[in-house]
Length: 281
Ligand SMILES: NC(=O)c1ccc[n+]([C@@H]2O[C@H](COP(=O)([O-])OP(=O)(O)OC[C@H]3O[C@@H](n4cnc5c(N)ncnc54)[C@H](OP(=O)(O)O)[C@@H]3O)[C@@H](O)[C@H]2O)c1
Image 1 (cartoon, protein in one colour):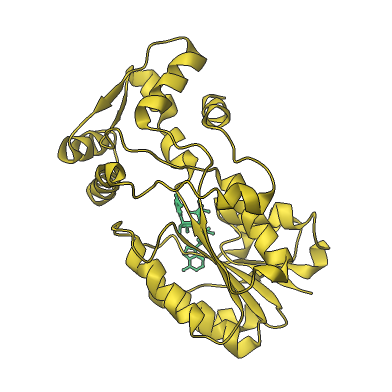
Image 2 (cartoon, rainbow, N blue to C red):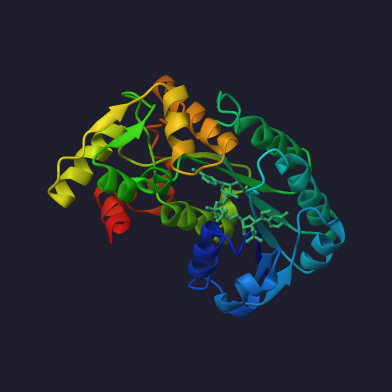
């Protein structure tokens, strides 16, 4: 049995490969990376695979039985890039595909959703058994702001009282490994999210508790939040995207209480306190 993991040089991909090594011999795991040198330390064979270069993809997928397609980070280019991977998988005779999608990809108003929905549709029509992992918000998306909040004396955002069912990349990586290793997940679509939802005020309270400093949450309009992020050095388009996603949080776009993730991985998802401690370390 040979497994392949795309995006193996990325943060999620690295965690998946590390965990998959506990389930399968390293020789049966192929790390697929656009820049193979970035995945050379993973201790498994690395194959070059660029989503924009179909010739690299078919070669990289030769002899692969089960593929994890980790969605590309190139927002706006993803559907055609994923198309290239899926067509190469079909041509190479891959027997099962696991895809990391987005929470509620079929109904989510997030601008990120249509690309994922398009890939899901193509995957379902491909004729290869598949599993769709609709990953919720990485808690790290939020805890990435912890140090800045401590330095600035407040956590800012535009998510109001909206609840975020975040889970860590490690939680999602464990789910991917379970789906890869067990054929019984074929044909299933999972909405994966953390067990306990938090608001940004909860995050600020947890930062305050762990640091012993009062770090309040300041809610801004999306426009003001985008302006503040630009002031911190983020490119305007990224600042606007982040602020726009935040502004949708009160509508429940990042909330899910189905607990499919903890059921899949057989343990509770990582608590916010643990993620904050990691961010402060
Ligand atoms: N659920 C969430 O909250 C959330 C948050 C952020 C991202 N995501 C999605 O989840 C994915 C994994 O997250 P992550 O944190 O691991 O992201 P990441 O660290 O940015 O990794 C992205 C991976 O995609 C690879 N990639 C990008 N363009 C490629 C191309 N043309 N050909 C081949 N590989 C390409 C990157 O390769 P290089 O190393 O060569 O750049 C990298 O390995 C992201 O790509 C994104 O789709 C989800």
